[in-house]
Image (cartoon, rainbow, N blue to C red; front, side, top):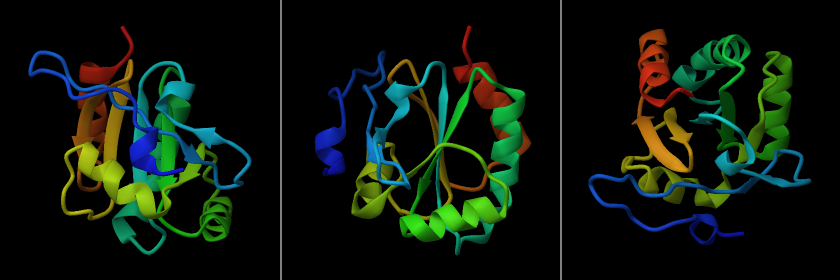
Length: 152
C-alpha cells in the first residue's frame, strides 16, 4: 500500500491544522496500524538501528509510554522488519511498531520534515498533526508536548 494513498484528509487552513493519518504494516506483517487505531495522543517516532540518537531515545520513549498510559508511542522502523524486531527485542523495547518501507520519506515530508534525517518525532492528536521535531528528543520536549497535545 502506498503511503500517499493511505493519508486521510486534506490540507487545513491556518486556523485548523491538516488532517494527518497513515496506516503502515506491523513488523510482523499481519495487520496495518496508524494513529487512528489508538485513543488519545500518539507520539510517532521514526527511527533506524544505525542511528545513534534514535537508539539512545528508545528507552526514553519506552519510559514515557509506561508513565503516560493515555499516550501511545508508535515506532516507525526504517530497517527491514526482521532486523527491527530483533533489535527491539534485544533491548526490551515493547512498543507498537510498524515498518516505514519506501513510503517513510512521504510521511516525513507531509509532517514538514524535508531533510529525511533521523530521528524524527511527531504527535498526532484527534487526527491532526500537533507537534513535530526533526531531531532527538529531550525530556523537556515530551513535557512541552504533554502540555500542548495531551488529552484534556
